[in-house]
Image 1: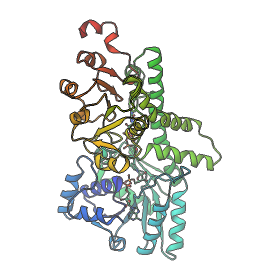
Image 2: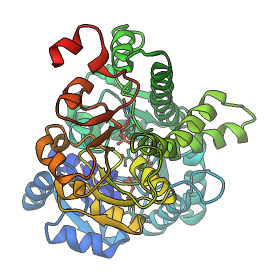
Image 3: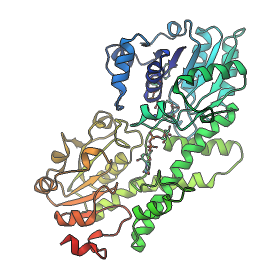
Image 4: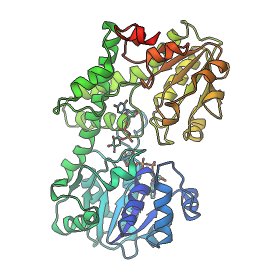
Length: 446
Ligand code: NAD
Ligand code: UDX
């Protein structure tokens, strides 16, 4: 099939490259001329494991091309995907649909009749509005608008795209449904893995899924706080409840709060969708409130670990991306922790394997280090915010020698208290008692 992908960011580029890898012919379009120029030169402008290889091999095979020229891309395509951004609208938290509506207008002007698939995450009713806009802009043409939300996670995007748990297709006509079946046929999914439903239901499935996962994270984070008060271990609570198949272990890792380009903005947008519909979503409201308070609150943990005052002291931060294996820092907890530490008077140094370029645009007065050890140099506390693999086996003798005071605040529970005590560190983590004092462990630790 011939596919045009409008928007070549984290979702559009991954989706386009994966569709090409399955044998479709794909043109990825973007308004950002620098991005397209880089892609034409074989440079992938985002960090996503495995993406560079499939972009290179499919470009070489002639199945994947890039352009800023929408009209050229729309010549003789069977289906057009819209994968442009839907950020939070400044001020009120609604999804900003400017880019989606603009793309709809541009397609209606440039294309003859075609199937248009909204892959961007959008509020309920957006496909109806896209359909209306296209009818108005291209009178006499016939556009079939489909909702096909995307569930890939950054850092695991290619695997998620190629082996999805499910594909959701909101469609109200047979030709568009057959087109979507043909688009996804090469993935070899079981028929039960493709859910055909109405467009409005498909749109809501996406928000409901993200809000539920965000709620799981906020829930375990509150349990972690309780664990700290009562001397229980949140990791073991997560294991214990996660073995119940009705609950599941996924998304029960306590941490500094969820971030990224999806959970924060999508939970806010869902609240607005509900408000507009006259329905109150108290669980989602609380999920957001718990998370917002938590991100900056993590700085208080660091300050307490550093002796109660960080004014004029140095704090190192390991990890800037909102999760490992991505360069994306959008709404990363690390940014909130850093600004709260700066507000408390600390000098901050930071290191991230991939997120430094993006973080530089968001932060002021931070010393960006070349690696974890230079980040730790001269610090009074080191905070592990993002659980990159390369932070999982740090050389603590070397770190201790670099640091002013050996304090590690581990916001991802990567290390163990007894081990860190043995290595001479004051160690603070999330929702776990000091393991060196747990029965049966203290002797082993000596
Ligand atoms: P992004 O910001 O990385 O990329 C969007 C791209 O669209 C940008 O490069 C921008 O220049 C381009 N663009 C905007 N308007 C355009 C137009 N009219 N024509 C051509 N290009 C245009 O965004 P993203 O992270 O890929 O997210 C895209 C959508 O997918 C959002 O709705 C998001 O909520 C959803 N989503 C994202 C993820 C994720 O992990 N990032 C996962 C699932 C769904
Ligand atoms: C999310 C959804 O998972 C994906 O389906 C959707 O398409 C886009 O949004 P993403 O934001 O890329 O994906 O990452 P995800 O792995 O879901 O993590 C989101 C945030 O939650 C991160 O900040 C992560 O650190 C945090 N998280 C996740 C936890 O704190 N604990 C967990 O157990 C899981």
